[in-house]
Length: 84
Image (cartoon, rainbow, N blue to C red; front, side):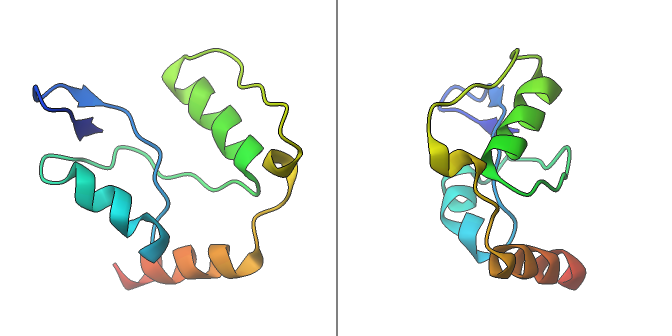
């Protein structure tokens, strides 16, 4: 959950590790991690995120959404979480 300019907490879906540092820097202070989940592609992540927030069904016409994340991205996020 990330505060907007009025202090209202809004949902955000950010990657762990260095790939999410820039987004986290924009949202801090006042942000809070409320849930951690793992998925293997952008499509799977957005499908879970939409379901979690009650947004309905995520759809896309982008072929790249279905490609698996590179293993090095997952390794980077695992290392970040393990270091916490």
